[in-house]
Amino acid sequence: MSLSQDALTQLRVKANDVRQGIIRALEAAGSGHSAGSLDMADIFTALYGSVLRHDPNNIEWADRDRLLLSCGHIAPVRYSAMANFGYFPVEELLTLRKFGSRLQGHPERVTLPAVETTSGPLGEGLAQGVGMALAAKLDKKDWRVYVVTSDAEHQCGLHWEAMMTAGKFKLDNLMCIIDRNFIQIDGSTEDIMPLEPLGDKYRSFNWEVFEVDGHDMGAILETIEKAKQVKGKPTVIVANTIPGKGVSYMEGDYTWHGKPPNKEQAETALRELQADRERILANV
Amino acid sequence: MSEVTMDGETLHLHGYTDATNVKQVPTRNGFGEGLVEAGLKNKNVLAICADLVESTRMEAFKKACPEQYIEIGVAEQLLVAMAGGLASAGKIPWIASYAMFNPGRSWEQVRTIMALNETNVKIAGAHAGVSVGPDGATHQAVEDIAIMRVIPHMTVVVPCDAIQTKKATLALSEMVGPVYLRFAREKSAIVTTEKTPFEIGKAQTFREGTDVAIVACGILVYNALIAAEELAKDGISARVVNNHTVKPMDTAAIVAAAKDCGAIVTVEEHQIHAGMGSRVAEIVAANHPVPIEFIGVQDRFGQSGDPVELIEHYGMGTTAIVAAAKKAVARKG
Image (cartoon, rainbow over the protein chains, first blue to last red):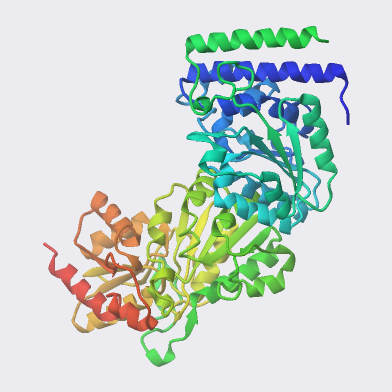
């Protein structure tokens, strides 16, 4: 599958919309996680805009692909992508983390079923994805499971239990996408608990490993498509990302892991993103 | 004994007063049998095993329903999380290990993935209580009821014998929602029969009485019945309630016990703190305060030993129940 330049441009514009939604939601909430949310905007746009078999108007569709967000704290990117792809009005993003909102600080399936599962406690998404992928195999269904994880949650033991199990059951309907931004709350992942060589770890657990620039829309789509062709093994895509991507003062700064922009900072961010948006359109 | 009735329905209890006539079967056998029946009835019922297929009694299911059996090795957090995924795709997974690890090791996964997430996962906690015996304290779960009953949406069931454990396994497979079923390793007395009714959330009065109510769960229900026989010899009329559903507890039955008898003894193979008896106390305190005595493990850890020896040592034998009942009666105003 290769998309036309027009379609790619549209997706890039969508990713920009998703980023702007994240900034507005986080500023309104007054708390939340900026860096990881922004750096996964391109991947989530690719997933909702091109990869997933899904229907925002039929969220109970039995044969839909399942997308799990294991690192629930970057909920703003998922919410913003969902809003921008028709799951709910974009204005609802401003209710993020507020009393009575469906957009809980960390995603909850009971209040917002389309998130597929409740997440936030780290290291638990892949294991649930393994269960879902196995259910699809048992029922001989062709829907797929995508699990987005952070890099730091590879420090949780349960994630490795799940990796081992996916290898055992040869779950080629399961794809894990890692937000490899090298940051966590206390600093760099490689200082706190080194993860490298991360790809080799997956290979030794009988996974097929891919790597991609997590901000190159064309490359993201190509890599996912390649990974989907793998038979007899689960696949993982290590997506190299820049924390805070799209907002100059956040990019690469781990201190933006767990805080939102204030009003002025949000205005600056939106101005920058708007300029980006115009550049994307002008390049057509 | 078979004449005992509840709400006009006979309970068909097995005779328990003649010790030579008492059949001894491990409650885990009832789980194994119930699981096979549930699996044959509904192919969405799955058994997920964490390297304890024989001792959790999943072996028969593995043979009868091989396509519905999944082995994942020693990984109890994975048990819960993976079962959550299977359940959200329409499966009814039973996950089994020793209660000490399942749910002992996986509490946060149970809370988030099963309860908050409302998934239809069934935990089977085997080898609960000090009656595990020689394995010692590391393998004797006496805190599991507490950590499960405190979680919203959970259903917690502790059946009194192997026959009831089978019925509970079937009933819990059919209800929709997260569940904790607790059972034991050792052989224990059969007090019910195939005909005895079982309903989740409905406590059963196994013996009528007016001076004190002994509210028990699990394999110690038998000790409670024997204690009531002893008390009768001393002229004390003891009601015995099989309080198999710890959550949601049968509030009406507990309040009735408090009102009718004016004193209560709770009996469980668990810490007296925060277990079944504590829930009884919460209900009684809020509705009809009466003296309560608590039989169970008194804020200690278990140790190696013979099961019966340990039950006695930790104050859960018949003599201890009789003494507690007399104390409760004496405390009545």
